[in-house]
Amino acid sequence: MTKRTSAKYKIDRRMGENIWGRAKSPVNRREYGPGQHGQRRKNKLSDFGTQLRAKQKLKGYYGDLTEKQFRRIYAEAERVKGDTGENLIGLLERRLDAVVYRAKFVPTIFAARQFVNHGHITVNGQRVNIASYRVKEGDVIAIRDRSRQLAIVLEAVGLAERDVPDYLEVDHNKMTATFVRTPALGDVPYAVVMEPNLVVEYYAKN
Image (cartoon, rainbow, N blue to C red; front, top):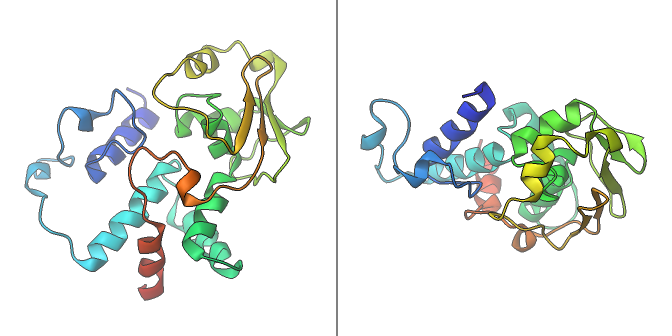
């Protein structure tokens, strides 16, 4: 098992939820946390614990972002007019690695980050290798010609466990995705319930 795969499954087990809806998640077999005391960790969470868990789950979902990265995105969501929780989701979904994952170009968010970093993606015809690059409405994201027959791409396109959301227009024949609009929380096809309002509460107190 690769380090990346191990980290992905550890997040699932730590949260006690199959947060990406993956068929191979260990949570499908056992619903307790990692480690020798995992089975005893079912105590009722405090308000702080519930808020922290919501933050860790959202942060983990987008490839286990560092606290510094996530806090920076949150600070921007707070500055923008409107609901901070909704703004946060919109900013996270505009990350290039998130768009590559949503478009089903690769099977996991972790693979999406690596795929972008390795230079397989273009935005409006220009190669972009920064996973945190923020796409805009109307941007066309594409897999470079030489990368379209990679096994990881062919595997992802055939995955039945998730669908492409309607804020992307995806052509898997041409391997292109147009970012149509910034989604609201209700538009995002999370496999589990995400609670950005609790993330807002967490940062308001910490």
